[in-house]
Image (cartoon, rainbow, N blue to C red):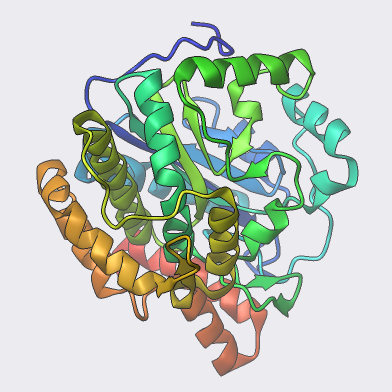
Amino acid sequence: MPDDALEFAGSKYPTVGIEIEFQLLDPVSFDLVDGILPLLRNYPAEPRVKPEFTQCTVEINSSVCTDIDELRSDITGLTKELKRRCVGLGFALCGAGTHPFSLRPAAITPLPHYVQMEQRMVYLAHTLKTYALHVHVGMPSGDAAIAVMSMLKPYLPILLALSASSPFWQGQDTGFASFRQRVLATMRDYGLPPSFASWRQFTQCFENLRAAGAAHVVRDIHWDIRPSPHYGTLEVRVMDVQPTLADTFILAALVQTLEVYLLRCWQQKAPVRPAMLQQWWAQKENCFRASQRGTDAEIIVDETGRVLPIKALTRELMANLAETACELKTKKWLDQLEAGLDTGRSYFRQRAVFSETRSLRNVVASMVDELEAELIGR
């Protein structure tokens, strides 16, 4: 199938796969380093290790997995080998939504697709030092993917808050839990997607974008959630990268469980709980609140403007996902998420290190160490 084909491949089982965008760092200064080109020259035989838009980024892709335990085995081995290669080249590896203190403009990876993006984005291209976790879940059809995409949109603020790991930017505490989301808000095609009634309506939208020269393939559309027809998945893109793989797998488990739960509700015409407001204005406001206050945010839940804490909504969501979680064998992961809801988020930990040491270099070092300790079993 060609890359730009809009036939939806479909998946009989709700498979799960992830993409992680890691930061490449100097191991002494802990600033970003343009290391992707030498890394790829040193890594010619691994197609799951890929370049990204900026040269200070390396992306890894999982295999298509049936459950989170399989995903953990797959990604852990891949990350260990990636880290070994990075150390051999004099790089450190870090997971966070932004780099806390890097000031220099990003260098763009010199591949045709990225060069074209740079020409379209001009100065904005060099500000795009952001790092995301993307989670793909297999969907049975394009219509199913589009239906679940619309149903999932009100829950994106919860996913954003739970993943928030970018409180610092260019040497400043931004006051946001996920400043990455605010950087991306300056771009023309990031953020909340429109809602569509069917797969056909989505394909008509894409064809119009292609005719206008705004997109050539579906991956040119950078919404917070989008269908991936070639893979037969619905891809959640709203989340920050995590410093640890454990938090990564917890979030992947949540996304897989939530998408399958919503799919079953759509198939059975059953109500979704907790009920969330579908209006665009509320979804936009809620995403802003989640990016600013993280899990301490209160978001709008009905047309009267009533708000509820994200923590309370998350706990209610966990209760409604319990049956689906047992079926998918994700319950142990969701239990860990709920247990760490008050203190376990990365933006808390980063601010705690800075409060104690007054050093953003120490903040980055602490995240490098979190991944290091996990990979070597400390």
